[in-house]
Picture 1 (cartoon, rainbow over the protein chains, first blue to last red):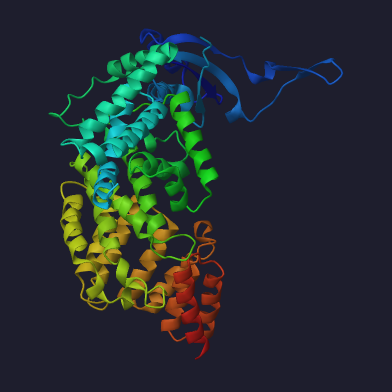
Picture 2 (picture 1 turned 90 degrees about the vertical axis):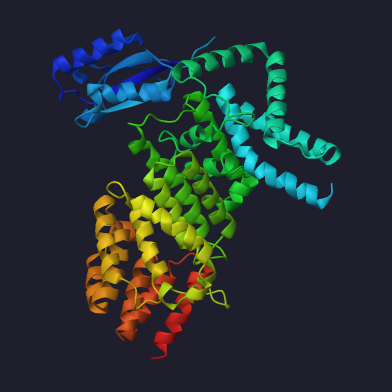
Length: 108
Length: 414
């Protein structure tokens, strides 16, 4: 079953080496489906279609540092316990950061 | 159906329902289907057994019938069967199936205990799930246990089941290294059932014996499944030693009787005798856990002839240990009451006053009630009356309210 691990927080409490080690272990375990690290929040742009159909493009949003989505992994593991184990090992879970584990809907 | 057969059939279902359900969940990895075929097998038994007699191995009969129903279902629904087959493969990959005990059902209930108390489920629902699936209560009975409308409980159970299947919370026993973080959740789920039954948070009865006894039954099952876990022994001991006092806790008028005023000859010696060796188990062979320590405190009360010969210094020390294991203002409150017994009311009152304004005690009647009791013993009646009135404004169950009203009129009379 596929789960998305959403990495919230700055991730600044960990060294690049720790992130690289984690990434390597996810790939070597054969569970990696996809994953990206997102550029800083200051570069974010929001888009919405207004009530009269107009396109509204704005700078932001600016969430609190610990709520910022910093990246994600999609992994394929047997169950929620396996998914939370991988989430707990991620450097993003430490130093005030948190991981949210969401099952991915699969349309068969 | 003749009464004796119905009674024996119901007794068997009580014992077998959870076992059967757990074995089917293990086999098919699907709680919904396991529940449905369990009910169907029991209905079939209600039809057949009065005619054919109760089979020699009722559990095996039920399991065979339930499995046959499950296979029928899978034949009808190929897509579902394919999904279940996949689940089965993944479950076997995760942990090979336990060999079945000769002729009997494999006992898969331990897995189900851990699923029902899984940390990814809302804490408030874990006791309800445990009652529903391990104790085998109906949704109506579970709703009654928690004093919520049936509709509300049904929704909570459906939502929890949906999370179990949707997020795929596994049916598995945690590895030994995971137990220290996972077992407390299971113990807490059982203890929450017990405390709900023991000091009903609202309603006419102080003790809902049926609920406390379900918790005891679950505690005994868990003790058999995890004989080496000392905190399981501690929890069972705590529940036994507390429940042993049930008949002495309310007077003929239905009011609560405090521990020091209870007629100790009414305490259930059989339960105390079952509980005391478990305390020894819980405290031997390593540092004690919170349930073991609380059981030890309960045991010191059980062995004392009366309140004055109780070993209060030892009880205070045990509360110190408990405070280091699970710090909480509620533990501090109980410790303050024990200090009052050891060193006098003034000392206890000073500690209680230090807890004033604790957010975790706000809204709980036990805090003003404990203060009121110490003030009453000190003869400070106007202050005691005020504190009793405050407690009355917060107390839940009728027996507690009756007790507080009696005390209030007593101190007002001075």
